[in-house]
Image (cartoon, rainbow, N blue to C red; front, side, top):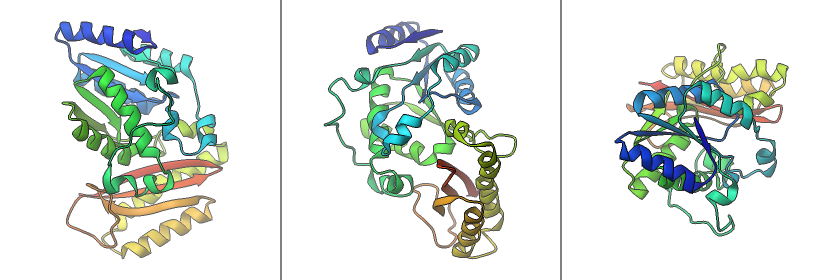
Length: 281
């Protein structure tokens, strides 16, 4: 496994792969790796000859400076895990390598209504930051396949839209959410939970399962109300509990004969957790 820090080093390696007619898979991460990330690496190895992983805590996608400061950074441990899981290249750039002109006057993208709902509403500017870093990484690596996790479903839709906008011929694969034994979606933020809050955090998964089992049997507003009350009673501060169209995340007030998805974002003990689940079909 090779660890590189500059665009020049990265592209030199990628070019050798291209010359050998090898396919390249890419897994973008912000580090603090867990079994969910490693499942993406495994999927990448199954779908491409070579696996490139990036580790970069992207400052321009954090609307909360404290969240950026507290984001766990575990590079040595991450590299050990990636080597054990047979990644070929790990790209660990400094900020100036990604944003050589600084971050004050970056481009903006027309991401449409998707940018302003749910995570976009609660984290203003977040998806512009995601688009900016992803475009740079994709143009550096030019992968054949890009693999990201379903837990960040809205982010996956944003990146799929970006791929269309910049017209890169990249196959996108969204890997199913990887969960702990008790259902909690794996996340780098989970390690910031206290023991007591870690136990409570499974209520988000249980709430999604409840929505999936009950959406045919009661009005959506009543269903959201029941779930919201349960989360509040457990000590969560709720950002949203919604049922949406899967295709565009437009919030639904009643069932539609289309793919639908439930999404929840809530804080417990100051740690913000998100999760989602398809409820139909």
